[in-house]
Image 1 (spheres, helix red, strand yellow):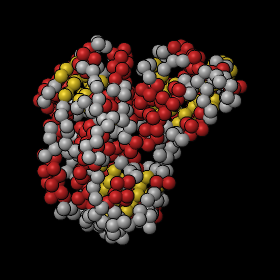
Image 2 (spheres, rainbow, N blue to C red; image 1 turned 30 degrees about the vertical axis):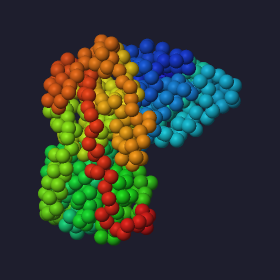
Image 3 (cartoon, rainbow, N blue to C red; image 1 turned 120 degrees about the vertical axis):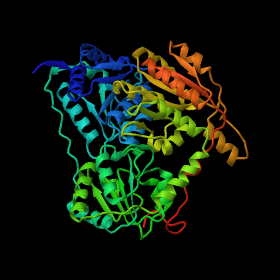
Image 4 (cartoon, rainbow, N blue to C red; image 1 turned 45 degrees about the vertical axis):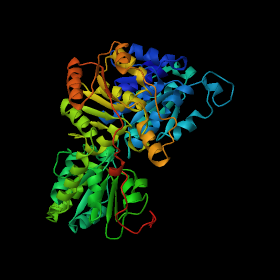
Length: 547
């Protein structure tokens, strides 16, 4: 067995698991880890941003695009806390991110001595925003803990994990016994439950499918079931692109709301079904089938008519076999054309946002990756941006973490190969990580960021104006000249004052094959919330969520 330090064995184990990038900020607690990465730099790339939050967001972006585990490393205390918002976002999205967290000397952990970056119960903190947190204590357990942590990140409902290592342990040497990647077992739904789901769907005349992030790797199966049943497939945020939004059966959240009232069966795949169960209403005439890898998710809000605990793709194939055996053949939903027409009419009034989204889509190649930020254009894109394939539309899920966008886009670009990456952000969210333009230039990460600049936290300002008597506070912003700001980093930058100008600027930026910024000054944008915050259409008003 070769003799290695803990740090060297961790790096070797990451590589053995297919992780060839480490997003990390250096610091004395992790010096041995960085030295180990240097020794292995022909096998692993180290990308260092300017802030710990960005290291974690970059790992998140890379995980969302690939669907595979990605790793970042930060120092303890402030470093971990700076990265915590990204870990929380990853937890909400079920992203397989591995956090390598430094620690103070092992003899002093949780003793309150006042060591540099000391924080009480760091593992306890991390347990709230990860699936699990472990501590490496010796060379003997390093490789095994990496293997176990990565396997856990991919098991059941995927999600982030953390490994903590004290500064005096990283450099400890010992005989290295590499632990091979642990096979990940996917849950298999019970055959009786699959048959029950087939019973419900076979008897429905207006079935509806709702997909979330848990269906991203089951697009072909979702489409096959939808086409067999003639069931519209509704997506929002995380589920965009499970089937192409150009598919005749693909519908937005708004259109799904229009179909919800007359639906007589719902198949929910890899989604919390939050908006529908907490707001739109469920009654006895609407049997709901929940398919999820997480057994705890099945009965959240209310007990479904049928619960399927299993891998989405595998379970849907079993369901499809059962439906074919029954010779089920659905009929087109008669409500679909009118619902689609009504939504198209609403979008036609949502200008200039729709024209800006069309400009981005026209310039972005079909396989390009679109990252949306928590901003007016981003909100609208969750309903209306055309998405051709899974994992090409990145949205922050229910955390809706303002400022997540640029770091996430940089991580996406790091693993995207030749595919183009564009971020649509607002001036408020972009300034959370604006100095990472330096990281984009230093590591040649070809993200094109579009900054829609209204000089405000626009959504906050609208709420204050409409709901609080126009008592505006803490919503107006002072911004730099974004073009000159980008140019100060040596980055090409453009200014567009119209949708046509944006499309032209994007085409120029993409042709450069490097980082770029497009500044788009805008006025107040129309509110998208009447298409998102939709009223109850089933059940009695005030009906409790739980039966």
